[in-house]
Structures are given as C-alpha cells and as structure tokens.
Amino acid sequence: MNETPHSLSSSRTMWELLDRRARLSPDRPLFFQDDRSLTSGALRARAERVAAGLYGMGVRPGTVVAWQLPTRIETAVLSFALARLGAVQSPLIPFLRDREVGFALRESGAGFFAVPGEWRGFDHTAMARRLGAKGVFEAYDALPDGDPAVLPAPPDDGTAVRWIYWTSGTTSDPKGVLHTDRSLIAGGSCLAHALRPSAGDVGSIAFPYAHIGGPDYTVMLLLYGFPAVLFEQFALPEALAAYRARGVTIAGGSTAFYTMFLTEQRKQPGRKLIPSLRLLAGGGAPKPPGVYHAVVREMDVQLTHGYGMTEVPMITMGAPDDTPENLATTEGRPPRGMEVRVVDGEVRLRGEAVCRGYLDPEQTAEAFDEEGFLRSGDLGHLTGSGHLVLTGRLKDVIIRKGENISAKEIEELLHRHPGVGDVAVIGLPDAGRGELVCAVVEQPPGAPALTLAAVTSYLRAEGLSVHKLPERLEVVDALPRNETLRKVLKYKLRERYADPAPSARAVTREP
Image (cartoon, rainbow, N blue to C red; front, side, top):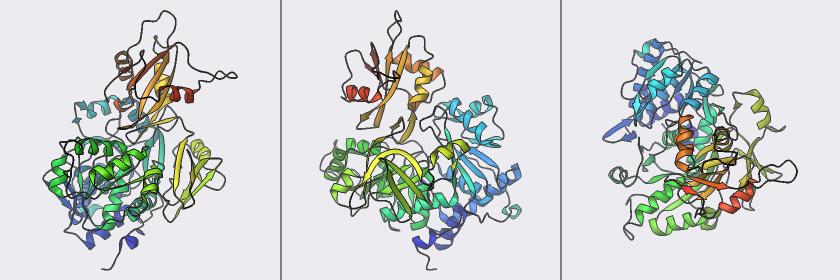
C-alpha cells in the first residue's frame, strides 16, 4: 500500500482513518502507558468489540454519549468505539465538577455518561447520580464488550456533527462547540503537516485526552504512524522515567509544560534532560519569547508554538525550520486550507477545521460574520511573511495552563459573597501557567477582611472547578471605572498588578 500521510488525511471519518492506519501498520504501537502498549490493529479490533458492547446497551448512531475520563488507553478505545458506531461524543475534562458537568449533560441531551468511578479522590459516579445523569457506566479498566457481528455498517459521512466540545469562553455557562469528524481530521492534519514528524518519532500526551487536543494529536499519530506515551497524571520529575524509557522525541502541551521541563533541566545544567527529545511543541496559552530562547539554549531542543481554540483546534503553528525570531515572537503560519483574516484588529477564521457552530443557534449567529468567518475574539496582525502575531483578546477570558476560564463566571459567584461589594477577575501574566487568576475585590463598609483561603473555600462550596480558583486576591478601596457607565476598567487593573509581586494588601496561594 502506498498511502501517504497526506492521502490518509482525506479520510472521511475518524473510523476510516483508524481503519486505514490499521491496514498499513497493524503491528506498530500507537499508544504506550506505563508497561502497556496498544498497536493500531489492536485498537481497531478492541474498539469494534467495545462498540458491540455499547450497541448492546442501546447506543445507536446519533446517540449522544458524554464521557469524563482521564488520559488512558481505555479512553481512546472507548472514543473510537463510539466513532465506529457513529454516536455523538461529548468529552468532558476530568476536573470539571457539578456546575459545568450538569450543564453539559442537560444541554447536550446525553443519553449515556461514562465516568471513571472514584478518581484522584473524587467520586465521579456519585456526582453523575447526584446530577440525575442517564445511562451512567464506569469505563476506567473494564469496557463494554460484544460480538462485532451485531454492528451496523460504519458511518461514511464525515460532515455530520458527531462531537460536542465545551468551552467557557466569555460567558458564565460553557458553550457546546459542534465538530465533525472532518473538522477534527483537518485540525490534526494541520498540526501534523506543520510539525513534520516521521514514523520514527515517539510523541506524548500529557494533557487531558478529553481536551480538543486529544483528537488533534491522535489524528497526527494515525497519519504518520508513530506512537505516543499517555500520562494519566502528569507531574515532573516523576514522568521523566517514562519519557526516557520510551525514547520520547516530541513533547510539550503548553507554556506551562515548557517551564516545567525547564525547571527540571536547570537542576542538572549541561546534561540533557531527555536524551532522545528533539522538539517541544504546543499551544493554548501565551508564550513569552524568553521561554522560547531559554528552552532552545538550555534544553538543546527546538520549540514550536501554535494557536488554536476549541472552535478551531489548529489555526497556526510554528514550523521547525522557521527563523528563531518568528518562533519566539509569532504563533506561526496558517496551513493550507486555513484562511486567516484580520478585521478591525480581530482575527477571523474560515476553513475545514473550523467548527460548525454551537449548540445554541444564537451563539452561532453571533460567532460568524456574513462571509462565514469565525470571529475569534482575539486581536492580532499578520506579518509580511504570513506569520500571525497575537496582541490581546476581545473576549474577557483567562487562559491558565491552556484552559479557558470565564472571568464572568467567577465574578458572578463572588458577587454573592457577603464580604464582596464588587469584584473584577482578571488574568495576569505568569511564566509557568501563561496566566494566573486574580480577583480584585471592593468590600462593603464594615465587612470583615477577606482572605484568599476564605474566597477559595467559598468558591469550592459553590461548585467551581479547582483549576478556576483564584491564585491571587487584591483588596482595593475602589475599583477603577470610566466616567460614563461606570464600567470597571480592567485594563487598568492588569497594568497595576502585572508586577509578579503582590501588593501589601494581597494574599496568594500556590498553584
């Protein structure tokens, strides 16, 4: 067979892409985890049996199945089993809690919900029952099983909506982003062709598989036929043994990952942290130029950074042969098939990798302009060489470790606290996390002084996810406002508190 990565990228569906890879190299590993491995042929065979088991449970083409599972081989198997059936998948990040999960289940109309049981000290099954979820089943070690002979024909329409991803954006409730198999394959193809991997590479997935980056990365593995190491719980230095043992050549995830690797490298300067590593790659959060130069200089690897979002998993990507200046100061160039237009400073996007819209038709109408370009809400400009430079955001969103956090959601919860008169939540630059969450509070007269511990305890009790909790609290006499509608001027707060050292009245928590 003479199929190439570029010809494989023409696959109509995710199942067809796996089937073609399984026929090309059935015995080559696709996933490593701990002491386990799974070949592409075994993934296809096992996914068909799991699909049959799901079919026996009542899952049919078009059935909405939500899953909130960690990064495991079993999670990938379940996802491909659902792709084989033509079900509609609604992946949920494992650290989401009652508020977001309940909203996603209701809005998507999920008929089934796969959970890991008790994981990292939290009982996901109990939460599912508490929320009244339908068709709850645990899918951590054991998966449904059945005879593939009962299965209907695989889906052949790659343009049908079969994925609902969730992003908080600028609103307090998540938004359900509608993707097709083709849009995910297009996004993963863009990433793959930008990074130019080879069959001899070994990648790594150290981020949640339920993130939009999960299919993005998996498409790249299937196109080029190389494996990746999966990390259910990523932490350094503990993960280094697996990187070294498996000979990982491509690692990364986001700015937070780059800085974590740098921290470990600095413990043993002059000795390469991961001998086989040649490339760090990622996106999802701002990348300071200093981080790029430090990685290249101290780790002796290349660093390519890109720009994507839940609505468009791959927009631009730095290429390994770009100039150091472009790699340090831009988000890379858009691939063939991705149209990037800047209108009044805002980046707008059109192409096959762009989502079909949102579950809410009104949100879809607002998101696309009259020519079908998606309004990203990000500000930027294109250089003469076609590289994209991002300069800010129209959306009031904080990007912490590659995850979007709605400032409004946190503000609305804090407004209910008796010790809060008014509040503005902002993102502040942070070398390790991209941005950290800072709550700036105006207290009512006579209120007891707030502490960060009290604020985070209150937000936890309100069901806010842990990754959204403020790391910093600033208490002020008065928030800065304009003279017309008395709107809080958040840009002034960002300017005031951009210094990494908190003020005398501030308190902070560890990340």
